[in-house]
Length: 222
Image: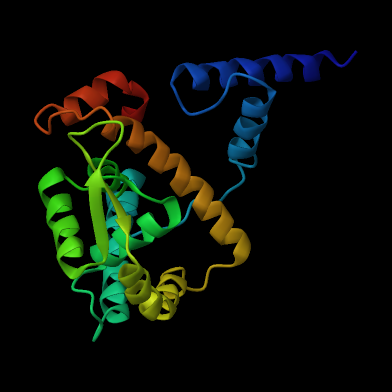
């Protein structure tokens, strides 16, 4: 029997169990273990990239945060171009319509939360869509206090008229990434999004947010 292999396997499982305890989105079964192995495979042989300020002590978390902010701004620039000379006023309007087209009717707060907006801003966007005749609302059968909104035929029309440019903008945002790189980026961003969605769903007051996350997710400070 190869006892070294057995020991390495046991060590790997112990590391996997530690990750599960941290709440890192791994199911505690063979499927979760396989995902953990894929996530950590070849980790030691991947060369660290260089970045501005690295020699002066700038940490990777700072770089990642900055790049995400910059990518959001680049994407918004292309989105503005996509709706130029159209009936849309903002990119949020067509994003809300796309959500309603893809996921179907939903209550207002569900649509707002799906787009990670606060209630006042989300309601402004929805009210503009209603005013334009692109969405309609009716009382929810489950909760009479809530309104269910759905996209109208006119909303589908105005969205379809602009979809070519919207898809073009999306393709430009992904730049020169290969298909493999796109799939890897989706995996990493989805993992990151799942982490933050869990926190977002808790509706923690902004004054307590950093302290609460640091306390409940201590591994993010490592």
